[in-house]
Image 1 (cartoon, rainbow, N blue to C red):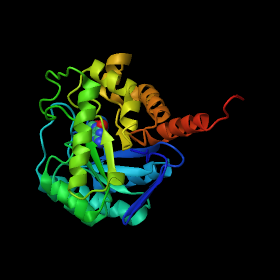
Image 2 (image 1 turned 45 degrees about the horizontal axis):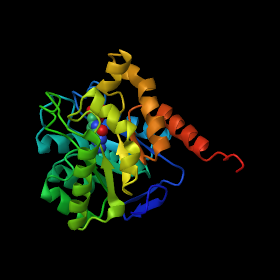
Image 3 (image 1 turned 90 degrees about the horizontal axis):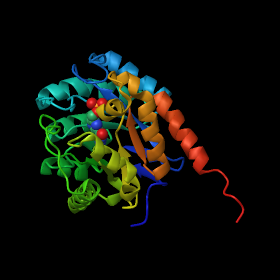
Image 4 (image 1 turned 180 degrees about the horizontal axis):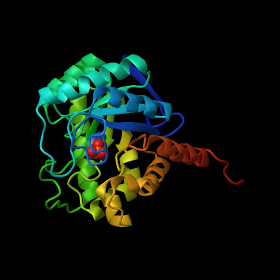
Length: 288
Ligand code: PMM
C-alpha cells in the first residue's frame, strides 16, 4: 500500500494536515482517577480550559476520555462516561477548529460524543464491538485501532508473545481489514501498537524500535508513550509528570520513523519535539 502518512486527511467533520510531519494529540482525561493528572480536570469547565490551552500550545487533536485505562483500572458504566465527556466535548467543539476524538470502546459513549461534536473514535479495543465499527462507518469518522493483550484490569499480570512486533502488526492489519469490511475507508484507519497495554518493558522497547514496520503498512500510525510506566522503569522517575524527557525521546524517534500522531500530555514540549524533528528531516541532503 502506498503511504498516506504525509497527506491531508479531510472528512465531513474535520481535517488533519500531515504535510508538516507528525501531529500532536493532546490527552484530556475527564476522570477522577487518571494516573497522570490525578483527576485534576474533573469539572467540565476546567477540562475545557485545559483543552483550549493544549490547542493554543499546538495540539492538532484533543483526545477526550471518561474512563481510565491505567493498568488495574475498572471499567466505568457508559452513562457515567457520557456524563463526564459530553459537556466537555460540546464546550470544546464550540470553541476550537481542531478535531476532537473520543477515547472509548463503547458504542453508546461514542454516539453521544459524536452528537456532542467529536470527529474521531479512539478505541483501545480496535473495534472489538461491532456496534462501534458500524457507527464509525455510518458517521464516516476516522478510527484509531489499538492493540491490547488482555484488559486494563489484568493486562500487566504476565504479558507474553513469541514475536511481539510480528504479532501486534498481524493483529492490527487484521483489524484494519475488518474495519474496512464494515465500510470504513483505509484512509480513516490509524493503527496503534498500544504501548503499555499488556506489554513488558522489553515488549514496549521492541515495538518502538521497529515502529517503522507499522509505518510501512501504509496505514497512518499513532503512538502513545506519554508519561507511561516503562519510562519510569528506564529512568527511575516515579512521578509521571517527571517523565517528560523520556517521553520526548520516544516522540522524536517515532516522528523520525514516520509516525503520524503522538498522543501526549505535555503538548507544548512535544510540539517543539515534533517540529524540530520535522525540520531536521526536511534538511538538505549532502551532494551526491
Ligand atoms: N493510552 C492510554 C489511553 N488511551 N489510546 C491510544 N490510542 N493509545 C494509547 O497509547 C492510549 C490510549 C493510557 O494513557 P492515559 O491514561 O494517560 O490516557
